[in-house]
Amino acid sequence: MDPFRKFFQQRMQPTPAQVNGDAKQKLDPLHVAACALLLELAHADEVFTEDEQNHVHAILMRHFSLDYDAAQELMRLAEIERRSSVDVFQFANLVRTSYDVGQKTLLAEIMWGLVLTDGEIARHESYMLRKIANLLDLEPGYLSKARAAAAAKLGGSDP
Image 1 (cartoon, rainbow, N blue to C red):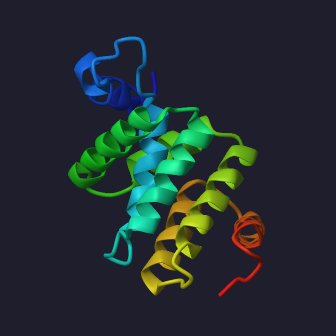
Image 2 (image 1 turned 30 degrees about the horizontal axis):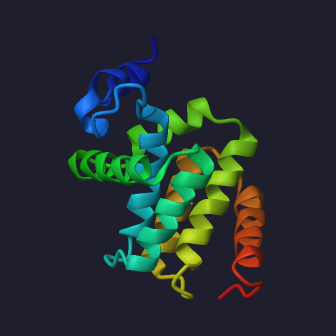
């Protein structure tokens, strides 16, 4: 078994209590990793606004088919993992080895949407997004298409 997958299975397997007492619903370690990447990006400019929080929450509900509380719990668990992590490599590597190019491109589009949520692109956000995209093995062409798609969804203007 891949050591990264083993790490996530051992360390990130939630207990039923971690999922608001619902033993049926388990948080997928891959979802935790993707959410941790989003949170790392959201914190890159050192300001995690309410709009960004709401954006991430809505993304988790829509793309991972989670209800409101499960998305909140995923954000909480991913934040704990993000803060206890040395860097984003472990999260990016799990996503890189699990997602196909289309899924990684969609994640990049979601990341660009998050960055563009506040209407400006901070230097640290742009750097972090490129770093994550590089760790995901996304070529620059995919990243620029993802940026254009995210800007179009947010109203067509790209700062």
